[in-house]
Image 1 (spheres, each protein chain N blue to C red):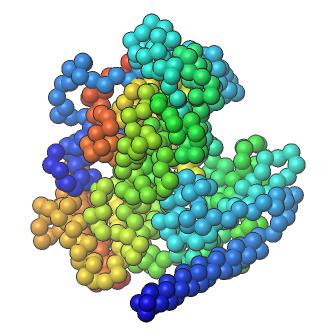
Image 2: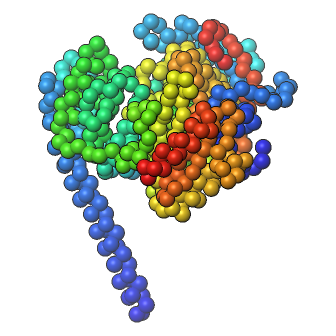
Image 3: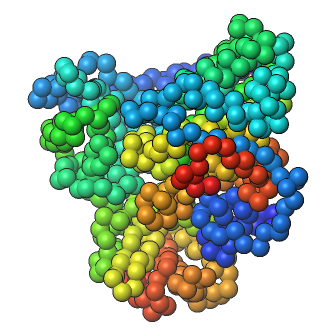
Length: 306
Length: 298
C-alpha cells in the first residue's frame, strides 16, 4: 500500500513537471509571437496585412514548407511568422520572418544561398528570381510575391526595405569569420553552418559524417580565388573541445586522405591538393588548392589567427 | 563494393562508385560491364511538344494520348484499355497517390487521365481516390488493393530529388524521421502494410521539371523547365534514377556549369542496395523513347 502511494506521488510530481515545462514553453512561444507580431507594421505603403498571421515552430514548420524546413532546423530556428501583405489589383506579397535565436544563426541561414544580387538591405541581402532574402539581428526574412508581375519586384524591394528598417537591433556575425585570412577571400562565398549535410550542399565531402559535425560544431566554408590558380576551398571548424577536434581530424584523414599519413597533405585525383590540420579546438581543411605550398600557407595563416 | 565503406568525393573523382550516384554527381560511367537487354528494367519516356500551350497550360487531350502511349508501350499492348487491364482489375480499390506541393503539383489533367482509364477498366468510382497528404485518413487508401504513384520530378532540399520513392512518405505519420542522411531510409516506407506490394504503376510527370532549388521553399521559377514529358514504369527506383540523371543534365545545360555535388539523392541508391525496392544502376535500365525528343537529354 505504501509503495503504491509513493508511485502515485511520483507520478503526480512528474506530471507537474511535464505540465509546467509545457506551460513554460507555451509562454515562451507566446512571448516570441507577440514580439514578432509587433516587429513589422501592419501597413506598409499601400500594402496592408491580411490579418491572418501564421506561426510555426520547430515541430510544426514541416506543415508549412515540407522538407525545406530542415534547412532552418539545422540552425537555431525558434519561430516562423508568415504574413501576407495585400493590395488591390496586385498579387499578395509573402513575408516569412524567422526568429533564429541569435544573429550568428540568422547570418548562417542567410549565408546558405548568396548567389544573386546584394541590394543593401538589413545586414546582408540577396535578391533574384523575385525572392528577397535578408538578415538583421536575430531575424532572417524572405519576401516574395505569390505571382510575378512587372511591378512585383519593385514592390518586394520597397516592402523589404521598410521591414529591414523596422528591425531596430543589429547583431554580430559568427566570430569564426574574423579568423579567416583575407587575401583572395571571396566574402560572399562564406557559408556558416553546423551539420555535414550543409557542408555537402556546398562542397560534397562524403555521405557519412566523417568530420563529426553536428549541432555542437560551428563551421565555415569559404572560397579563395585567383585568376591564375582557380578556386580553393577552406573549411574551418570549431569543436567543443580539443579532444573532439583531434578525433574529428583523425576520422577525416582516415576516410578522406588515408595515404597522407602524418603529413596530412595529399594530391587528389583531380591534380589539386588537400591539407588538414587541428589546432586547439579547431580543425582546418584546405580543399582543391593549386599547390601544396598554397595549401600550407592557408593553414599557417589561419593558425596565426586562432 | 565493400559494405560499410565510406564513400567520399575522391571516389567520385576516380569514378569507382555505383552508377546512380556517379550519374547524379556527373562523373563518367566507367568500368561498367555490358548488361543484356532482357535483363534490363524497362521505363518509357513519352514527350509531346504540344502538350503545353504558349501560356503554359496543359492540353488535356494530348496528355491523355501521351499517357496512353506510354502505358501501352510499357505493358506491350496495342491499346491502353488492354494495357490498363493488365494493371488493374475491376474489383480493385485504387488509390492514386498524387502530390499537392503548391509550387509544382501533379497536374490535375494527369490525375484525370489516369482516373479515366481506371474507370474504363471497370473499377467503381467510389473505389477510386486521388490524395496526397490525407492518405492515412482516406478510406479508399486504407482499404486499397492497388496504388498508382504519380508526381512531378523536382529537386528536393534534403533528399536530392523528389521522385517516386519519396512520394510515399505521406504514408507515415512522421515524415521528418526520414530526413537524416539525405532521406536515405525513404524506401523503407514502401514496406509498410498500407503500401507493400500494392503499387501497380509509377509515373513521373516531366511536363515541368524543377532542376535546381533555391530560396524559401527551395523553389525558384527560373529553374523550372517545360520538358513536356512523362516517365512511366513499374520500378520506382529505376524511374528516380533516370529522373536524377535528367535533372543533373538540365542543371548543366541551364546553368552552363556542372553543379553535380548538391545534395545527392542517395536514397535512390539505398532503395536498391539496402531495401531491394528496385534497380538504380543506369546500365540496367532501358529507356524506351516515344514522340518528340528534341532536347530530351537522356
